Image (cartoon, rainbow, N blue to C red):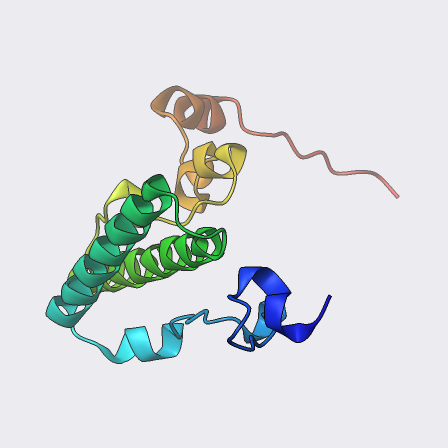
Length: 150
């Protein structure tokens, strides 16, 4: 096999062999979360719409029978969409957390999780309270003290 009929090329034109890049060097653009955190809510929404459009285009190309390299790009775009949504959610939660800072009651999803048993345990003030019945018992039947002869 000579270089002129390599990979289905016509016999008169020499062809270069196809070089596949390793996975790390392929055209994968991973968005940086630090850059996303600096953007405003409107810019993040715009970025999200752009990634969703890109994903739609890639899926259409995949259905049309494009190369297998598109599947890795689809994966990267989906991950980028997830990153943008995560940053948007974090910003929204921080805004609500700032709104309720210093208030007595905060929304349940912003409260400290801990464990179910710890959340239901009595507070120190509840433990120290004495019922009216117990107060009367303490008054009328106080602990007796005896003097011991030495």
